[in-house]
Length: 290
Image (cartoon, rainbow, N blue to C red; front, side):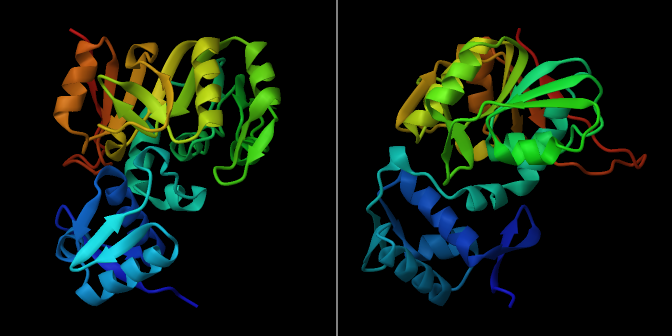
C-alpha cells in the first residue's frame, strides 16, 4: 500500500515528502532549537495544520517533544540526536548524489582508500564499480555488498561490533584493523561541522572510528551536505584542519565556506546536476586556498 506524501516546494520545484521524512525534518529542527510554532512548521514544510498536528502527536508519543499551545517544545538532547539509517539515506538525496559525483573524481585507479559507512559515502561507493586496481577498506556492510561483484575492486572489511541503527562496524576489532593499515585516501561522512569547534558526531563509538581513519590516511576527504554546518554533536572527532578536502553542495552557506577556506581547507562545491545549453552536465566549482 502506498504511503501518503505531503507536497514540499524547494526552490520553486514541487517535490513530495513521506510522513517519516517530514518527521525527521521536525526532529532536525528541534535538535537545534528548543521550541517551534505549528504555523512555522506549516510554512517550512508546506503542509496543512492538520498534517502538522498529526506529526506532532506522533512525535509526542515517541517522546521527542511535548505539544504546547500553537506548537511544540523539544525533549531531545540536540547533541545526541541520531535519526535512523533509513531516514538518513532518504534525506537530502539529491544533494548527496551531487556530492558523490564530485567526490568520485578524487578517487583514482590504483588507490587504496577507506570508505567510512555514512550514507553519503555509500552513495559514492555505488559509483566506483568500474574502477581498476582500486583497494577499498570499509567498516560498512552496505559498501561491501555494493562492491562485491566489482572485478577491478579489492574489498577489505574491518569487522567489529555492528551498530544496528547506523549499519556501521565499530568497537575494538574495527579499531585494531585501522591501527594496522596505512591508506592513500580516506573518505568519511560528517554529521556536524562547525568551523570554530570542529567535527563531531552523536555517537562516541563512531567518533573513535573517525579519529582512527583520519590518522591512517595521507589524504582525508570529508563529505557533508549543507544541513551539517554550524552544528555541534556529542562526541568530538577533531578540528577541521585535520581534513584536507571537503565536498559539499551548493546550498551550503558561503560564510561557512569562507571560514573553512581561511582554516586551510580545500572546499569543492557540488552543483545540482543540470544540463547546460550544450546538453552537457555542469561541472562543480572548486574553491582553493588563497
